[in-house]
Picture (cartoon, rainbow, N blue to C red):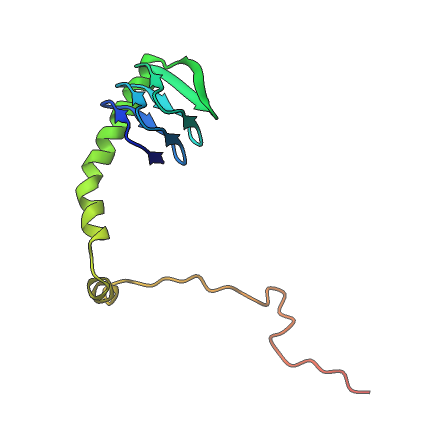
Length: 124
């Protein structure tokens, strides 16, 4: 998502590839649908779902949806330190880790019917 100088409340969700303009306010527990465009200075009220281009009110979120969004946000927060550590590794650190990887590349059978397994030539 691309977020300008906006205010995003706790447990609010901004979908993938969405954009939020400068001065917009996404209140706590609100959601912006993926690929939506929230115009500058727009307020998305708590517990509502906005979507489209420009983003408009679509519907109120159920209490189950708000709870699920909060759980998702907590999960993302928990993964943040690990993600940051992985992203800050140098090229040398990544290469050093590769020696411990178990590479399991699937072998593709390029001759499933067995037609190429032996040389078959026709002589006249």
